[in-house]
Image (cartoon, rainbow, N blue to C red; front, side, top):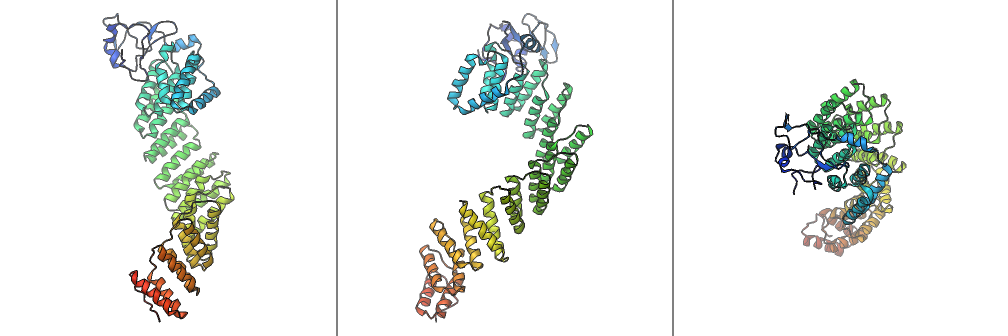
Length: 518
């Protein structure tokens, strides 16, 4: 017989027949999360609910929307006490089991778990909880919920920890309404959900921006006498900032301090992140100073929040101040810290500051990723056209990329060649031009024109002519300036035939040089 009950309270099989009169009661169909039939270890079929049912009472009293009678039912919490169930599980055993499950493919996982359960894995509720938690850790909440629905066939009654795991599984699957129903069921059955379980649900709701629902659960904690921890508040703060309600988050922070609950570093980081995302990084910096004054040690994530905020606002130099403060506070910057700051400095044209930060990053032994290296090199190359002293730094970075087997973008390669040409490093520019071609990359017309310009300026017209031939082979049209320089160079050397040949080639390509053969 198919069951009208959805997971996690699905009755897969009934150990004893259920009278048809019970099936026809309104309660049976309207309270799908309050009726969970199973056979206990005492051999009795019970309804795990404080609102018990009876098929013999023709006029049961009504309590709210639910039918109630006085049939005695063994309370779950009393059953746990009588059976002496140990709610604590071996963390080592659970983690070991989770690692084993995670390694197995889907088909083998099913076979392994079936064998594990048959070999006594479900002999006690504590053992069953171990399996369910291991599945949750192994990122398989579906299997965990399926096994939970089969508990009745093993004559096991779920305890508070069982339902806590089930709630976690629903949160993992983004089934937040179902998770809330599990929480309601626990309370109605006389369980006392701990603050960790409720905080997990609040956190899941906040992550998805369902703040009204999250505050409803938060208020619900007070009605059952469960006192929120600072971690509970941290979830709410992150959720408020996630949806842009920064002022409310700040007010909640003030309330936390007013209620004599000491905020931790995560509390401040959450609000700081909210301020930074809306362009109020200075206020976030004030919160950082306040946290330090309280004796809290800001984490690398706290500082990274400020780097992102200042760089987003176009004030990356403030990030350098934060970096200095970070190191003074004995907090070691990580790759994200440096990369965020470097990217911001380069984006806003602070090339020299970016170069100093890059060198500091290398000294700290942190590897710079390919994207940042290419950005840095392009910035140095462009700036070196006017600030010649940066050319050496650009070439040093370029050589480091080559020896470090970085993927150098073709555009970066071209900029390096152009920078070398403009800086008078003709030999290095030619070497890199040929290296680029050998690697299968095709330099653009601008790169070739810069090389021709540099060669002609150095009175190396014969080599410039070879570059012209190379361009012709690759069907790249030189600029009018390149043709002018080549013709003038040939005239200067008294090579009239070469000058005429170049002039004719230019006309065929649709370019009319200003200079003419003499």
